[in-house]
Length: 200
Image 1 (tube, one colour):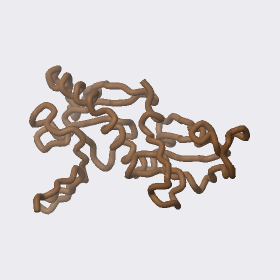
Image 2 (cartoon, rainbow, N blue to C red):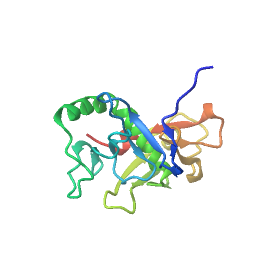
Image 3 (cartoon, rainbow, N blue to C red):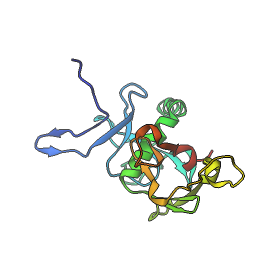
Image 4 (cartoon, rainbow, N blue to C red):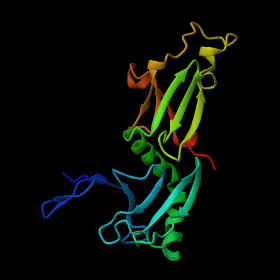
């Protein structure tokens, strides 16, 4: 049976344990892996995570709830270097091609880190993102627009049973809002979070 590699792993060398790392974009360009560690800044980004270039380069992928592509500014202590143009250009093309994948993986991290707070009031879901950080922003989803038959009296659906707050959760596996988690998987509804959280 062939080995299946996972993108999140723990490496042990010389008695030391490294932090788990998620490799999101591999070999861009060849020899450079991009991703993040389990403890990260609460703002979407990619940084070099391969052994040779670990934490050398970093690019921000959001600013104030909007999509971005901004190389991190070099620090005075030399921790982050300016990204050479040939590397930056390749990375920008790869991010553009796989943006949805990158954002979905980041949402999974956000849910794991409890960086998204969910509140349901009536038909309105309010998402508070990075609540305790300067990068904080909010988004709303109106369930009356997603499920008009449950909320519009004139809609020909019966019976009408509005969604209760306990029937709305965040799904880390699907990077989505999950409606009716108590039901069988085929009867649940999912609202993919990246297009809700980030705007162009």
